[in-house]
Image 1 (cartoon, rainbow, N blue to C red):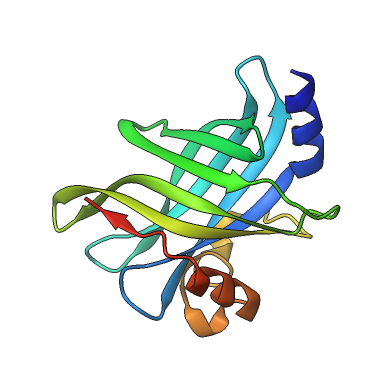
Image 2 (image 1 turned 45 degrees about the vertical axis):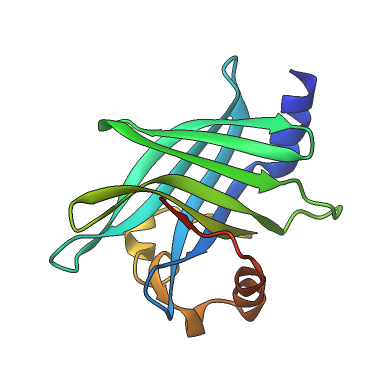
Length: 168
């Protein structure tokens, strides 16, 4: 419990989680929030953008817990509105005194043209200096399907060096 408290205090806040989309030139920007310690783990939430068949972008809301496991953080998310939607995120602990950029992998079940598959993508999480209070207003600007040219160069470089991409 002491380790969870230390981790929560150091990593509490919001992060924009970037990961590559299947079509080249687009990067998805999700919003990760790390909260306080509970008896179940460290409270976390994730707003993960989704583009429907009419090109409307909304976000799936996930809640869950983060667990420190050695030098990694394991996140387990469920979508409260749909019991079958589960995501996991594994992020490497920051090696620097100031937490600003984290790297890891997002995995879950992907859906493409009504077929399901196991999917995993590399992620780069950038800590926000200011909180996004209204995520819906941030869709299309800071969050959502972002052209890679609008993503910070450091994030693009980090994502291009990662070779995690699974589709089963």
